Length: 239
Image (tube, rainbow, N blue to C red; front, side, top):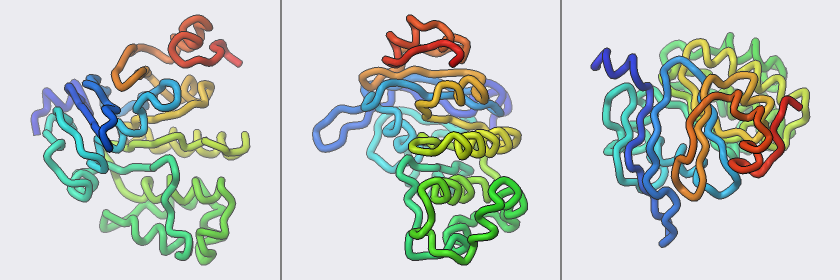
């Protein structure tokens, strides 16, 4: 592994394109993220944020360069990308509803010594419900399972797609706490519409529009109401 590259970028996308069923979704995405920090990937709905995460994992056909700590991974299949140290929390959770909570977690094990202590300390509810079928959990509890699966393993890169979508404020706080713990040992690329959460845990932000990156900067940029309205279509400020 090239240590100089590692110190510069944990993840680097260069001219990444994705076309699905004739729709050119990513139209030359370029960005790099620092190792060991949370980077927020922002933008209006439908601009390609989720597709960007899925392209990194290899869940959609893509062209261009994607490097993980200096190593080209765009030629790898999804399971090979995961084995290289990438964990993915998809927007729609994708848990196995007929399996128990514990069985869902067992299927996600990649390391010889999974981090069950960390998972159960963060989400004690999952320990209490480990023998309950995941499909009978509330939406918030299912999101805990989805995040827990990613935190079980020691990952170089954690890709998280809208983890607080539809959650009650108390659960949003729990998710933020979990991501802060994860950030101590992994680089995180976070797609999130909850701007207060982004401002709390992210060091950098990347904004997309119409399949390309249009801004890279600091979460402090979100304090500017004109910027937030122009880039995201939402109100800025600290509220």
